[in-house]
Length: 401
Image (cartoon, rainbow, N blue to C red; front, side, top):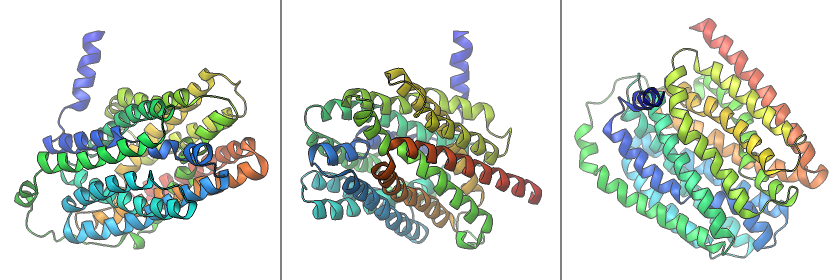
C-alpha cells in the first residue's frame, strides 16, 4: 500500500518541465509570506477600530485595484512578454506591503491598498502566460495545479505563521509579506535569468489573436466565474470575522483553519487532477465544485459552534476549490493561443478581481443589515445558480464540439 501510494505521487508529478518547477518554487517563496490579506479585515476592525463597512471598503478597493492591475498586466504581457512584468510586480508589491503597514489613516490606507493591488495583480496574467509557455497541452492542467500547489503550501505556512504573528503584533505581517515578495523577485532573476527567456523565443507566431471580448462562450464563462468567486472569497474575507466574532475563535485557531485549506490542496490536488484530468470536460468538474462549495456555506447556519465545524466547512470549500480552479485554468487556456494569451489571462484575472470587490462589499452590507445567517444562505443560493449556469455552458460546448 505504501509503495503504491508513493508511486501514485511520483507519477502525478512526472513529466513537468524544469522551468515549471522553477516558477512554482518562486511562487512558493512568495506565498509563504501571504498573511496580510487573510487578516486584513480583522486588522482593520480589531486594531485600527474601523467599522465592518470601512473594512469592507478597503477590501473592495483591493479588488478594484486588482481589476486595473490585471488589465494592465495582460496588455504588457502580450506586447512585451511575461518576464520583466513578473519581476517588477513582485518588487513593487513587496515595497507596498511594507508601506501600507505604516498607514493608519483611513483614506491613506485606502489609497495604499489600491496601489498595492495594482502591483500585485499585474503579476497574475504574466505568471499564467509563463506557465502556459513552459507546459505542453498534455500537462497544462497539472502545470497549473503544480503552481497552485506552491501557492497553497505557501498559504498554509503563511496562514499559520500569520495567525501566530498577529497574536503578538499585526505589523509583523506586513514586513514578512513585503520581504518575501522582494526575495521572490530576486529568486526569479536567479533561477530563470532573462537571457534564457530570450534564447527560447521562436519566430513570430502567426495564430489568430482574436480578442477574448469577442468570444461569447468565454464571456459567459467569465460571468459565472465572478458569481462563484464572489462566494469563494468569503472564505478569506468575512468567514474569518465570523469565526472571530460569532464563534469566538482566537487568531491562532483561525490561522490554522486558513492553513487547512492549503494543506488539503498540497496533499491531494495533484493526485486528484492526475486521476480525473481528461476523463470529463473541465466544465463538468467545475459544476460539481460549485455545488459542494454551496453546501459548505449553508452548513455555517446549521453546525454547532465547535472547531470541528470550522474544519468541516473549510474542507468542503477546499474540495470545491480543487474541482473548480485547476479546470477553470484549463478552460480559459483552451480558448486562447500564444498571440492573445495575456488578454485571456487578464480577463480571467479580472473576473476574480471583480469578485474581490463584490465579496467584501456585499458581504459586509448583508452582515450589517441582516447578519451572517442571511449572508451564508445567499452564498449557498449563488453557488447553486452558478453551478446551473456552468452546467448549461457545459451542454452548449459539448453540442458545438
